[in-house]
Length: 322
Image 1 (cartoon, rainbow, N blue to C red):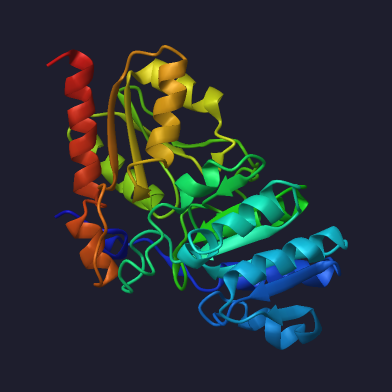
Image 2: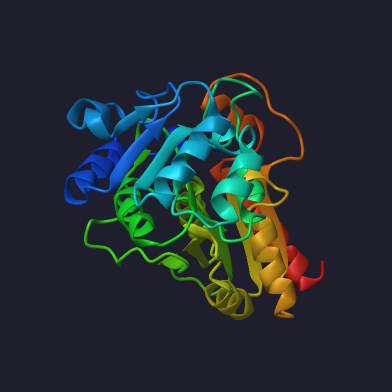
């Protein structure tokens, strides 16, 4: 069966982001939380209820939200801005570019419901947010793989001096990694599975499916590595190119358009390094999706274990010249 992330047996956790942000705020009095009438869906109800004097609901005015956050950063605050990814990026792109990325301002933008994780249709599906944020100078782009890594990433981006965009699934998130797993480091790839026949580079929810696909391929005699690219910019080019050169087969898996996201970043790195490798992408095709449940959308648009397995087989055939 072609499983989506909701059909695996992976355990999940609730409000990993919201609880970590509140804990960090209690340690750092300069941290403030801003939102745009989406307090519950962005897990910031925890912050609002515990620290109301440091919580600011700007309303459905995302461009203004970004300008206020930039001003607060210039005044010495550490703003975490929270809304749906599509509103945080597509709707307020010019304000992010001119008031946050350009100065640069120490603002952390957290975009929820990435890609096809929302049933809200085209107006709510952030399928191009990585591409938009990757293109901005000074912007760091992050997508953690699971709840453990979300907790680590919140602290890491708070320590980073400069603008950050982090995309997160709302509600339940997978738990793949141990709390004592290797420390999260911005800009560093993470090898989750060794392999000699190929490598799958994945980000966010697709890491769960990449690991499932690698296990399925192992049953077919394919030894496939899995690399978690939790930081899409700056990309860990050394990590990517070393695995690409060693295996000769590269597949990317992302809950984002196949244009401008993880696949594009990896392809750029591999080509620039002059590495000959079979290559295939798993991601949202160059189209707008539709309003439906996330499991339905993931299956329809090819974000599944079987799609990754097929992509690996395709890339292996390409590498052989068949």
